[in-house]
Length: 150
Image 1 (tube, one colour):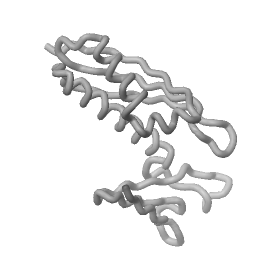
Image 2 (tube, helix red, strand yellow):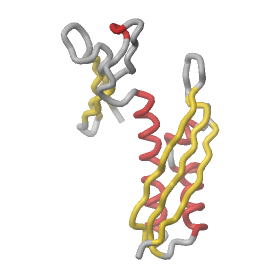
Image 3 (cartoon, rainbow, N blue to C red):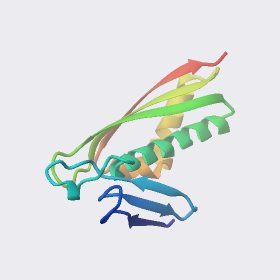
């Protein structure tokens, strides 16, 4: 896996702390810093997600992917899945994630709660590289709800 991140800031740019990531699969992701009122030259302009927000979003994508795939492989009629992530960070540098809660909302027909619990557990214990890596610094908790499809 490869990725190149390039600073797009500098004189005359929209944001002094803007970056663009070009992934090995050919996709582009923009990132920006938070505004810094005391030192505007060191802050961003809030034009794109913060780098740590992209880490959190990637973790959500990783685990949601696993949950859907595990449910589908179990021949469950899953029709939707989202995960809401809430994270806390350390107060001092490095401001690593210290707690992450993931709330899954799964839609489907006739999916047993035990199948969803198992899919989430398998993702976090075995398959989701991102959440397993973040669990080294953060306490990760999960919850879920099932919305029965018509």
